[in-house]
Image (cartoon, rainbow, N blue to C red; front, side, top):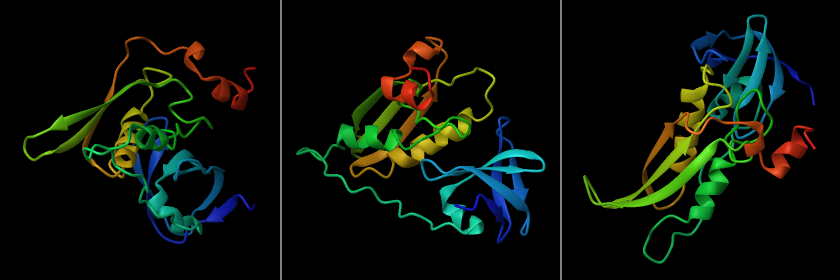
Length: 182
């Protein structure tokens, strides 16, 4: 796979690790580092950036369909396994392990709501590997967007918390293997 690309159009990207938005111009040369979870991590002369999957065409990539095929439960509630599967599609742009296997997701709860309209909200409490990570809001927004694709979910709230503090012991066995920690 050719990792060097030339942007086909202007694209708004998120600078890593600050989380600042910046427009990368058409014809800019980038080096593709990571293509996980439907987003792209690229290197430019000005540092690392994350490009959203919906802008994959600017890199010459196929834009993937975003619908999730999953049944709802008998009462119309979203399938919790489908929600966890979506969370496993969320990646820190600097680490090739999803946020679930990194141990960043502390809780996931499906709540029936009646106001302003009936439906199901998914509440997630998660953390980051480092408190100063500017990518936190982008990662949380990515998680929220992926959760909202699950049939039966009408709202999602992804909250970043620092308690308990994250440590490497929270990484799953699969995550540790991918990172070469075991």
